[in-house]
Each structure stands twice: as C-alpha cells, then as structure tokens.
Amino acid sequence: MNKLTKLQGMFGLGVLLSGSLMAQEYATAMDRAAWRASGNASRCVMEHQIDRVALARFVAEPGRGVRFELEWQQAGIQGGGAELALIPAPWQQGDAEPVASGQWQRQQLHYHQGIPGVLGAMANGRWLEIREPGSRRRFVMPSVHFQQAYSQFRLCRGEAAAEPGRDGNGLTLHFHAGVRGLSAGQRQGLSALAGRLAAEPGVRGILVESFTDSSGHPELNLRLSRERGEQVAELLRRQLPALAVEVRAYGAASPLATNDTSAGRYQNRRVVIRIIKEEQAS
Image (cartoon, rainbow, N blue to C red; front, side, top):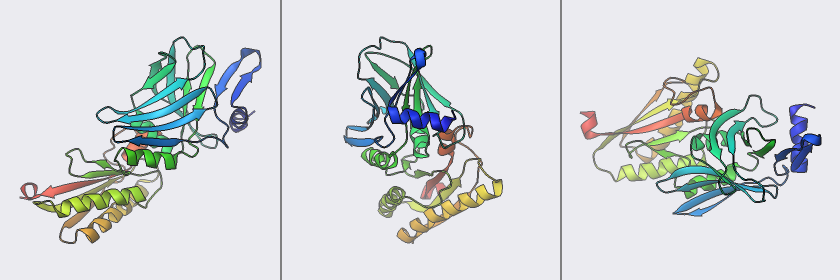
C-alpha cells in the first residue's frame, strides 16, 4: 500500500486500527475537514476538530505571540511526551520536519516554538502531525480549507498578511512559493502604510528590498524578487507620488532562516519596505 492510499483510507475512517497492534491514527475525513477562525482584540483562535476525539487550535493573544494547542476530549491520556512536526500532504514530496516537543498536561498539549513558521508552511500546503514516542497514537491535521480561516486569523491579529518592520515604521510581506502577485491583505497593508506615511513629517523616500528562498535557478530567483519588489513599489508610487521609491532585488541572498524546511523558506520569501527619513538621508 503506497503513502497516498494509506492516508486516503485513514481519512475515510477517522480512526484507523491496524491489526492486533491497535495503531491509532486520528484525523477527520477529508470531506469534513475544516479550519475555523474567531476572536476579538484580546484573543484570536483558529480551530480544527479531529474526528470526535480532539480539538486542535492556534491561539494568539497580545504580548504572548502565537501558540498551538491540542486538547484531548476523551479519557485515558495520563501524561508523556508528544512531538509536533510538519509533514507533506499525500500528493507532495518530502519528509517530516520536526518543530517542537511537548508534554501532556491535563489532557492538553501546548507548543510555542516555531509556530509562526508552522502557519506559513500550512498556508503553503503542508500538514501538521503529532506523534507520541513509544506510543502508536498519532494525530494528523490537514491544511484542507485552511487558507480562508488563516486570512481571518491574521486579520484578527491585525496583520493583514503583512508584518510591521522591526523599527515599527516599515513593513514586511511574505509570499507563498511561486506567487508573484500581491494578495488583497497585502494590498490592504500597503495602503494603510501609505496613508500613514502621507501624514508623517520627515519622510524622504522608501526603499523596497525583495528576497526569495533558494529554490530554483539563481537567475530566476533574482527575476522573481525584482517582479515582487516592483509590484510593491508601483502601488506605493501611485499612492505617494511625491516620494522616491527605490527597488533592490537580491534573489536568494541574505536568508532569514534555513532553506532546508518549508517554514524557513516561507520566512525567506519576503519584500521588506524600509522608510527613509530626513536624518537618514543626510
């Protein structure tokens, strides 16, 4: 039985019991798998029900970042460790990518390390898995119907598909693999930035720096980074005609994270908008 057939069977059953070894693999049937986002200014949540046995959720709260939780809704788990990992979807190539380790406490698991990268990888189609060393219990969370909930989750967090610059003035946009165009959320973030800069004194210009991951040919990466950067610059020039906007394309140079994982590659595919002020231009 190949990998795709096995996983298709697993998602048709929800809980797969493999012979006398009683290997338990928990997942929701693919036609019922869904992620749902909700929240307010103090708490944003994105949830996925795993069959009738567990609830997976990403939680973001001001000042606490984003974390991932798994709540076991049955009896029987007393403790022990559990490993969180990204896995390829059945139709993708690649190996599992470990993310973090956790411990069962009061029927729950909590993970804080590497979760922003997990979200980015799932937006690119990766799935999420939890395994327990020494146990045959396994939880699988697909990225089926993930994108819409993820967009709502980011809007709840005030991200609008963009991250503020490290100095609080600029903006960083991340891209999915192979995507050249700007999303609606990214355009919204750029428009909000332009509106703020139009009313801010001392702004002399804007520097747009564009990067890719290391996948593909270096010349194609350089061209792709140029295309992304020019799209950002074009939007800013239309809304801020009095400001000079310069684009610098670097291709795969200066990665923020490893290119060996999907989460790292997502972090590296970025356009950084830097604001040049009078004291910096002199």
